Amino acid sequence: TIILAFESSCDETSVAVVKNGNEILSNIVATQIKSHQRFGGVVPEVASRHHIEQINYCIEDAMKEAQVTFEDISAVAVTFGPGLVGALLVGVAAAKAIAFAHNLPLIPVNHMAGHIYAANFASEIKFPALALLVSGGHTELVYMPKENVFQIIGETRDDAAGEAFDKVGRVMGMKYPAGKEIDQLAASGKDTFNFPRAMEKEDNYDFSFSGLKSAFINTVHHASQVGEELNKADLAASFEQSVVDVLSAKTKKALQNFNVKQLILAGGVAANQGLRKQLDIDLAEFDNIELVKAPLNLCGDNAAMIGAAGYVGYKHQNFADMSLNAEPSLEFDWINE
Ligand code: ATP
Ligand code: MG
Ligand code: FE
Image (cartoon, protein in one colour):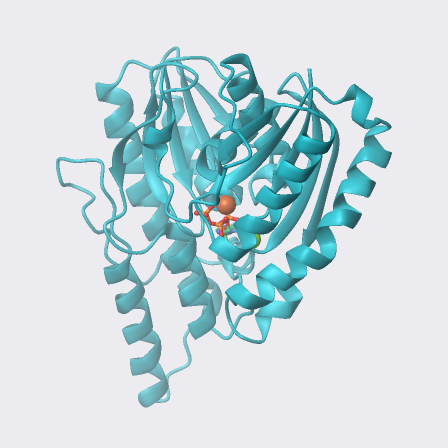
């Protein structure tokens, strides 16, 4: 089964060709980051225009690199939410056009399910599984009793983890998105600031990062008022450790209470080295739970992960018709058994 997959929910235009949900024949990712950086974040209108300009080249490149023709394609999969409505519409329109023209089934994919299924390229996902899903817009613990059932057991009450990285990075004068740069800086620093670990001890699986963000900003502003020079690497390390500690604590609590075969780490922030190392350590405490981390190059937005999730939809014949529309606020409950 060969799936042509589309992703355009935010600022990456991506088209991939994926075989049997676990083999990447091609994965073209055209990023627009440079166009958004001067605004300090993604500008929706700019994103939509870029997608329109890029999508046809991405389709051509993806098919060429995979060495396939439309005759080889079994189905078309596309992210239809959550994300920016104008951005999503470009991918949805392109996928519908190709499905219609070549009489192929159209598989609607939830972007967040796509992030989770990126892990399938590292190791076959086995159920029941728990996913720690950390990205620019989401921070969730998702329990998956089987392959197409998603239950959010905990989530952030305010900022997403990636959003906190980006906001804190902005205060440190870094370019958007700042997650990777903070991560690299943190590697040479120490947790000397001891920022708050919000909700770490609370009896739930929820997170909060806005207090940490405020504590960080107050520390930096206060230092600049009194003319004190702060160690940037230590600042980065302290911030990152605080994020990692709460993600780790709530994940361990969930692993104690849910009987799962795997812990899946996915989403853009899953690329974080501090987090990857901490979960390696944590999982050593649990016998018989395998840690499956999304491959580093597939943590951020890409269409290969949509092809992997789309394969599950294909197996369940979860097809859409030509009335498929973008759903900017899509949640997990669209998937039925
Ligand atoms: P969502 O998937 O929730 O709709 P999104 O698609 O914008 O949001 P992703 O592309 O999944 O988000 O992830 C991007 C986020 O990942 C950014 O906030 C970025 O700073 C963060 N990020 C990337 N690499 C790292 C890293 N090494 N450490 C921490 N954060 C990182
Ligand atoms: Mg992005
Ligand atoms: Fe994403």
